[in-house]
Image 1 (cartoon, rainbow, N blue to C red):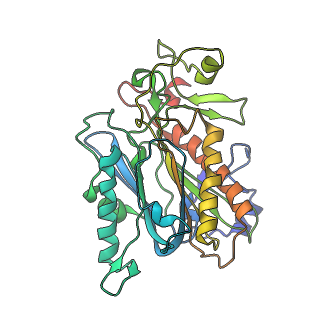
Image 2 (cartoon, rainbow, N blue to C red):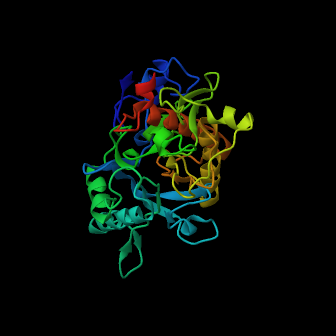
Length: 355
């Protein structure tokens, strides 16, 4: 598949002429992969820790973007989410951090704030420019040495790596230690990862992108392919997928879950103009993309959180229903790309290993 970066010279009209409408699971004729960096005003950078599978991913909007958020999981770990409520004052966001390391990983946002402050990016409070950097974390402490987790230096280095190029997918950044299919324990889980996608539907329509770190309790499924399990809980011999929902529907008893030990986190972005209420609605609708590809989702062990960013770079006010629908599809595609790009680590195979 041909790839283009966020700073590609190809116009939307040229892409449409080439037969590119959207990289959807139901769109087999896609010839170009678009990512969240195809949304004007968005950069992405990863930091991947080489000492164990963990890391962080930063989504930068240095010129500012209107932000929203929707938290569906029962065990979230977040920073600055209350600020994104339409009831509260500040509407601009300068970056979002997705990190491994559970609650410890929230420290990565401190490094992003430092990076942006050094470049005089932030809300002008007269005394100082204060960068607004919401964050969410996932639990990956069960993979390798739990004492190694993203910190402020990791967040800073992710910013240094940020660009408008197509971001790496799979075992990078916040997806480095991600796993899926954990209903029957880590010994039967599979590798998750990070993935990205973007959609536009006409030359003058909004560009809508998504990036997601997939670290779910549930299975990842291809809903448009006869509900095929792509990665998830494995059979006791470890050689095949169980399809946990079939087991649940057949009345099988589930083992007890350790709450807060998973979580899928992501960002959707658009170049349209939205207010905070609109951005929050987009974040809410984007969770449908998780529901289409992860089953079960939003459990007591997950802290599933999606942020929404509207850069306004197109100069056109966005249709919330249209953008929300595209955001859900972009998110669903990004989930599948994350799992397909993932590579196995010792004891935890990937989808590529079992197909």
